[in-house]
Length: 287
Length: 120
Image 1 (spheres, chains in turn red, purple):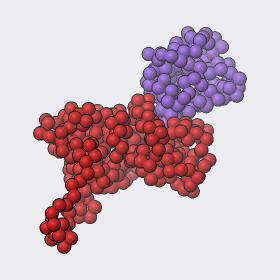
Image 2 (cartoon, each protein chain N blue to C red):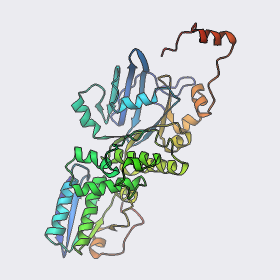
Image 3 (cartoon, rainbow over the protein chains, first blue to last red):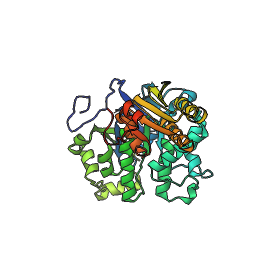
């Protein structure tokens, strides 16, 4: 169960909790703004070491912003992020670069370097950040590509790969430094069901064999329930649930149920509301 | 991580204590290649009893040791894999590529390959 006292219809946490040494990631009072618009409104959660946390939420819920902030691509306006016990949000770029060596990130788009082969893409972090012999790096590249089902593709250019293969190559690159903490942004989006199931299996194996702590942003509910130890549900920049997978399945929280039961948002009803919306009498949404 | 070697008959046992990671695996590689390539040791056996964790750089170093030993027509074996180390070798599909034994005695005797249950 959540470490916080349960609230009615609410599994998780909105109030700050003490930072635990046993956690791979701790987020406290995290707020992120784009200009004047606040996207995350004081987010708190923990990812215990060696566990997989899935972040669920609809489009615009703030989950991608949360992920980008966790890996240091966005600066929070306030709050704290602890990764492997070290404060990550409010440190210098040099300190952040050092901490990033223990973090892997698999982007939804793949984000491979188009001018480099797949093998060179996977090798790059190892060449940049370690003193490993080139022959060791070559073996590691083949190991990583094999783990994602891309054995023999090291000399291909990214443009020669399908979308799913690019995604798997990006995962291989994220794995190259054997990170303690691994982030996935929509790992199975756009993949056929068999490849997607293979990615789920890989995530489970990585957690078990390499003791990685893993954070996954996904829309795929079946995948989420398969790979997660814990889940959080974000809605409009606020965590509305933070629970184990079993607790989440049985949640009665309305926004959680709506998301899990795939209930569409109600349409704007009534001529007056619609007229007000069209004529601008209803002010724009401000978060 | 600490690494030391001892001769037992014609074999040399490499005792590794501590995790083998990205940052110390070059040390393991150096010891293995020195024994196999330079000293032409006929049988090198790596003792992993006190290695709780091995990452893929560590695995790659062992793969290099195995490859060079095959090139040299010598033999290369592992024993005492922890559950985690075994899972890593399973994940990387190497558990059946290496000669793996439960105990030092079995490894020295070059006995039947044990790939069913973890050493501990």
